[in-house]
Image (cartoon, rainbow, N blue to C red; front, side):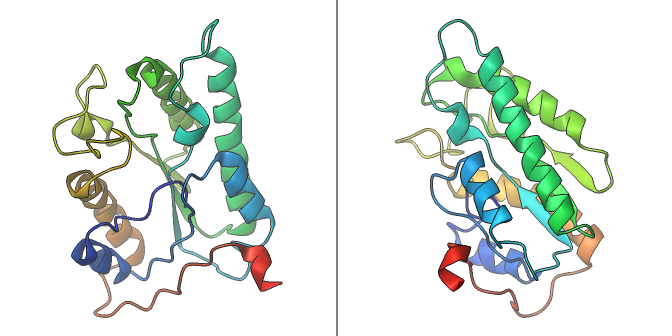
Length: 200
């Protein structure tokens, strides 16, 4: 759930993960506010997931460093992520949530300190059991936040390419297997929901 598809730019990779019977709940350019609205308006109703993967916040961070420091933005995004986790736990109390750290973005590296602070805060919201924190950023970029070659789209330096999605998938698969068991032979996942209000 969030701003990126589940590893999906590569058909074979997506098929492999969907054999774990993953549903897809996301829209392009998602913000925390969009996700909260959908959660509060039926997106998780009657779904009863075992695992939820969350990746959210980069669109709220944006690509401009605010004047006067990033403390307010960090607090706002952290609060939004906390709210998402709380609603997810209320709507899907039996699910394990994998809270994924916001990925590095190089469309403006000046926002990386804010992303690092938010990720640090997100890690503190995880308990290691019902909420697990997953940070793969050291596999996507160097210690200064500069992306490794081939990880993100060369044009926008924000959206993962196949190599970046593969890193994410490789990190998710052991968690999925631990929590769900081995993949099914066929994909039985429901279709993407889109806007839940459209079903009313």
